[in-house]
Image (cartoon, rainbow, N blue to C red; front, side, top):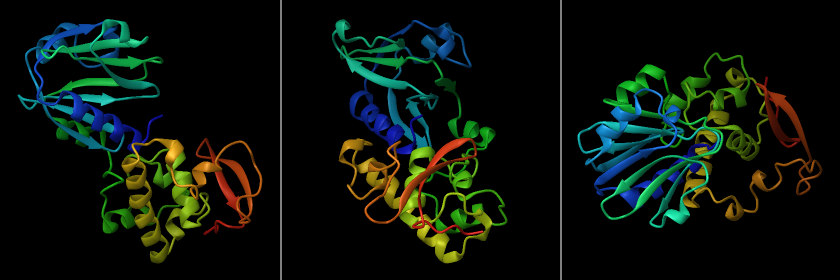
Length: 263
């Protein structure tokens, strides 16, 4: 599933391609992808409007319309935005498209249809209703440290709890734990202030680096655990043995003896 940097990259493309363009038409191929209104309501609400801004919190990003309504693009497992002028370039699994006066078409592509597309009158009210936590890229240290207080669950589980910190998924949680040299199964509430300060700094640093590189994995730094986090279990740069285990039902990679287990 796309995590914060991947969603941020999709939102960046949205800003670059469609802000300020007037929507001339809406074509819906699969109305089940739009979860809270009918295809007629969605089409009527968007036609002749413009997207004038975007907003992102964690893995949720919104296109803000010129009447202050917003469209939530929650990408699910396989959602993506595809821009094209030629109908021959229409994506294979396009579920709906927005056509603009310029001739540009934004196609919403989703193979598995786990996306959550909503038309909202108040996006911030919606975020409050679903209890989404503060964004992992901007959360301050005080709020970050409070998330861990008294928690008896694992470090990785807290990092991935979207109601506590929004935006971190399986891959980046492993990266953060590796670079902080903390075992992902450490007890969250047992971490010291120095541990938490390091975790907070690295969370921002890693996510920002990934955003700056447009979540293009092939150009991530060579010293990132990402390069080793796969099924080729073995030694990593003389630091120790790469192993895996299940934490919170998710396959988790770590380096035995290099990442300290705090409990």
